[in-house]
Length: 228
Image (tube, rainbow, N blue to C red):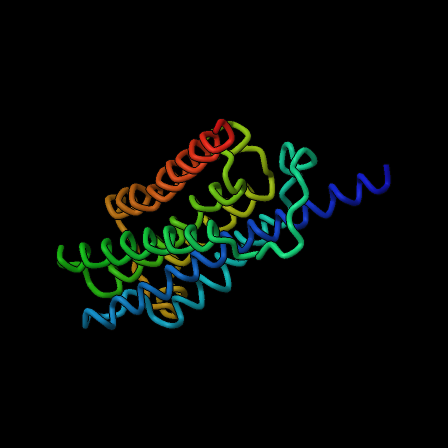
């Protein structure tokens, strides 16, 4: 019984490590691609260095820590042992890194360009870009709770109190970041109208549905392989 409990705990820790990596690398990759794309296209940077620091130090850390408290995956003890030489960054995780980073790049940079095209000030457009990136991270956190199992279920959306607490904290941070006058001075932000928030949520939520579609495709492929 003690050995079985130790194996279960080890699998839980290993799964939590993979989930954290699956969350952190794509979100950081998306940030890097946004800056690289702006430089290559000769555009104004969608985010300033201090705004990127805010995203990394306040929001990303808060959300990533929530994954450390995830419960044991259903069926964890029914899985066969993994190979000792299996790399932590598998081909699947590398694909997920590229896939999600690209979604974050297109959504955040695209909405920044849209706001500028509508005549928004650089401060307003950057505030929109930062909040869009954070919205992506919030929705992607739900995807990251399970590597392949669906997140669009009651358990997937509401089955983790630490995740819900982390999301509530980040939303509070972003409201202060956007509307508190001291934040305007420190980070160069501007208050946003309701229409901007509608666009931010619509674009940010796209990652949830796109990754769930990707998961469904992988599950279907694995099911076909097992049947063969």
